[in-house]
Image (cartoon, rainbow, N blue to C red; front, side, top):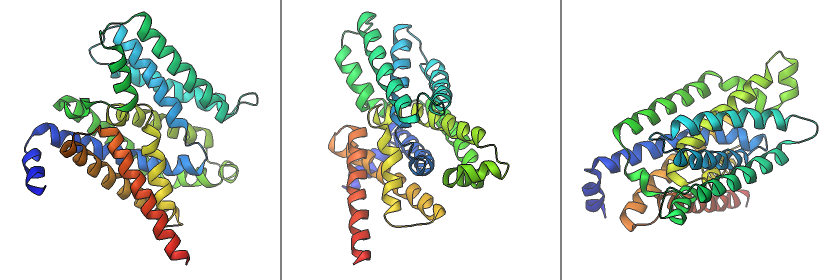
Length: 278
């Protein structure tokens, strides 16, 4: 197995997939901890379905670079989702459900009406559950992912203390003079960027796994915010790298394999937590 891994690692597409997969996993795990603690985990589902709708429109328009349309639309939806979720008439969970179902339905409807592919079912399935495009990345796409990931990491590190305060006690943070709306907006926009980056890795239906499983697994082992964040980052990176390598060796879907490894890791963390309580 080791010889086979060394053999595959000689190919650039394997190195590109590992680089992109690790960076996406790292960024999603860092943002996943605040989202889980704020009980806003399913924002990933809502935004991923919006991204699916954007991809459908981009494919109909025959855009060579879907990111030019999908990224702005997803970021705008994150802003609207935050504003709508703070309203008195429509709360956060209802707003996510409305945007999620609406974008998914409209995207599939557009792809059916203005079909530009002879294999519509295959295109939809690969978009929802991930595709092999993670193994056909170009150098430009990898460079774009690296730049966006560095920006996400820089935002999290620079505003770490403010994100920590807003996550645990928004009312106290507001009373202390922190612009909580601005930081909530920042979290939503950064999450939208991560969602778009993760579309090719795990697909729109499995993106929430990258956000939820690392945070929930690390919370079984640690209690402090910093410890949970560091553990979530390590857990996510290890599971994603292992999932990509296993999918290459076994010929299984990349996204589903990564999620399966994360499920196994979560089960292991739960077992360790149970043993520590005993």
